[in-house]
Image (tube, rainbow, N blue to C red; front, side):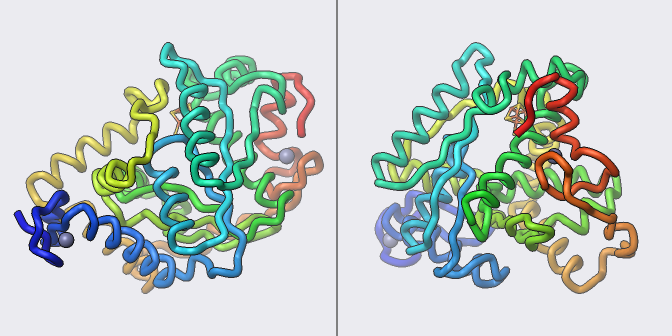
Length: 311
Ligand code: Q46
Ligand code: ZN
Ligand code: ZN
């Protein structure tokens, strides 16, 4: 297989795009495409301050790398969750994130959940009795809360995450199976800012997971290969496996599934009425973040339940 641009030996073959590229041209193609998506979906401009949520994985580190290569003002945010799982997961992901930041001279903000709230995520989850034995519910809540808090406190305009097409297609699949209309209406490459919350964007949402792995490898980015140990057996992994089977039989199926959804969503063709979505929000009396409950937000309630001082 030859590179479509220069005829040299191709190192990445993208059947769904009918495009094969050599390493050098692949390293040009990925940022070019990212820039195209940033503009197409009006994600952000060169003048805005971007905070990239980095986990030490291939997607978030590649996203940071791409944005900086494209000339955007992007700093990183790493959340220390305190997850060990027998593979020293949090320490290793932190080490690789710090190494990437210092190696590229980038600004990295660090938040350690245990230092801020007294306990690591698995313990917070246990004490607050949420999530039926898995810490993912508390983890998701804490990640969202802390990302919003840091973006607001440090004056960032945009919060960028490294979700790729496989992630988005799996979420879409789950939301469609359940016809979760509220989530379907909110799922997209951009979630506009609201009530003091920064805009949220997913610049990699049209890249397949294996395209991001190929990018990280070609750029020599050292990332953590292991998934979080609590991800094992999760519904999203199950959906991803199913979609991978579909993709093998019909290359491009995942991309079509996601893109047709975006088109339908944009044109109002989702057969979902927008009435339910405007839940009345007000600031949480403790942390100030918007909440639909009449008292404290879910995060502050969780922290209170764990009898720890809330931030
Ligand atoms: S939610 Fe669950 Fe993830 Fe948190 S505990 Fe791990 S698997 S990191 S995306
Ligand atoms: Zn080439
Ligand atoms: Zn709160």
